[in-house]
Image 1 (tube, helix red, strand yellow):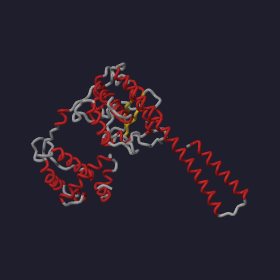
Image 2: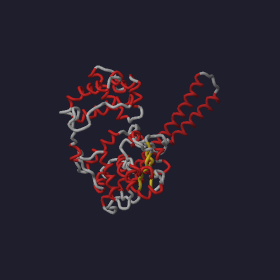
Image 3: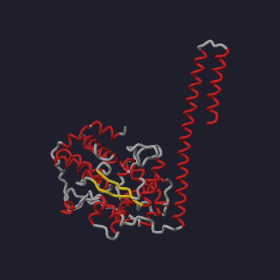
Image 4: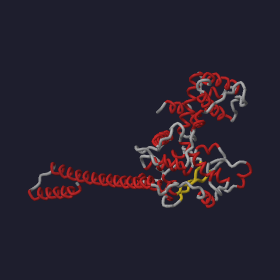
Length: 390
């Protein structure tokens, strides 16, 4: 158990506060609250029970030294501490929100200045640098559906199992899959996969989930653990660099922005659909008149967006398709071979147990010649049955 997990277990109310949040958010918020409490010599509950102005002043003493050198860290600490304090009775820490206030500090975002949102052509250039069917399925899933990366941690095989033969795969994103929806008044939203995205996911599931249960995580590591956001981050940085782009300019969230661009540029797509398919709140009275259950209309709108490759007949694309087919065939052969080895192992173990049982009986019995011959014949027969399998 890691240090932050021990901290959560030590304080039941902290555990309740974090229980519906993602694993990454639990780690971040708990670690920041723990460091604050240790530095200020208070427990989480003692600090939260203070007068709101006293609590605010204590936080300001803690984060003020970080502002000049590490303003983003100071801001992240403040977000976690505000959340914990507000969780008690809904009252917020009274920090200045206006520019120039006593407790105001500005955060610059240099990464945004260098961010590069890939075009569709550039995305497929990046996608072609993936080294496994799983990695390809993950990246095209992000690009064609536009989901937040935390969805990949929570989506299961059962969420897509019965649609793998369809031309378009419907993804119903709820607060269970996208934890950010829990803090917004959005019960669910629909997004989709089609074309190469649906085909890639189908082939990946054939290899990875041939015998999986519906509750099995859809995307897993080599060891069978659920994929997490750090893994997806590493995959993204690796293939971006292989494709010749600066890995500092493209992140997992950049693919969501690339999805947004494709939807925004599509002709004839309804504005409400553009917001819904991003998992955004539809502002004003428009939400009251928006039918979130009109799945047929959503599919029609999604199909107006072109997520396919522009140069379908290019030599590079043809070569990539051939390589993918070879990988698929190789993966299936490897899977069949593993099953054959497992079956053979079971048969050999069964034969060995039977022989051992006979030997045990022989040691405890006095047999005549005919009985010995019969036992030897049966042993030889068992050995002959196993020999062709080897």
